[in-house]
Image (cartoon, rainbow, N blue to C red; front, side, top):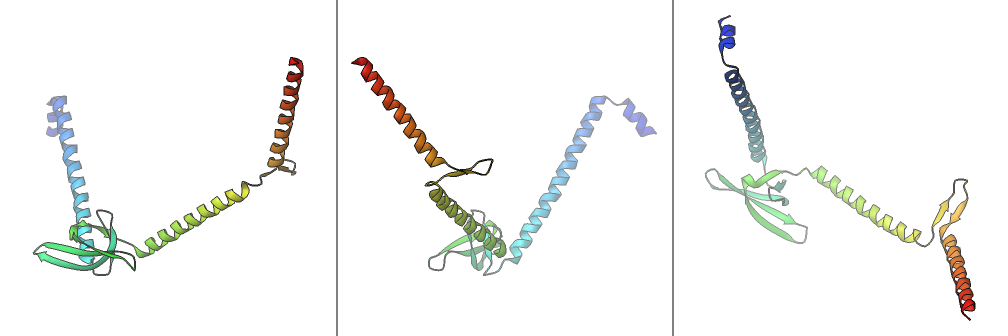
Length: 174
């Protein structure tokens, strides 16, 4: 009961200030615990790294670990092999530059999706080339309508009308 009387006697601005400071401290503790968990997960991932694993570096390079070397106590480097079967490049990074382990299955699925997208694009381009020669439209009653023939007839009609009008104008001038 004494605490309730103390709150009533305090200035409302002071109460608001105490609440804000309390919320800020709570948020700092909450975000700090999340950062500690993320750091612990990162360190656990680094401990699981072995030669032969595919990793993605913080620079975006994806490669296979050839070896991990402890240069000094607490300082490790990793030798990464990149490139295809014919051309290899070797890069040395600080072990902390490893962003994550590449999931081989996910990478294979990504390559499959990319190949499918390229095939679909090539098929669409080929279909567009094939369709550019003939354009047939089906009307609402099911009849086929050849747009190219229609355009050709329309052009002939317009040209014919222009020829007639120019001939009429030339006769009128004479």
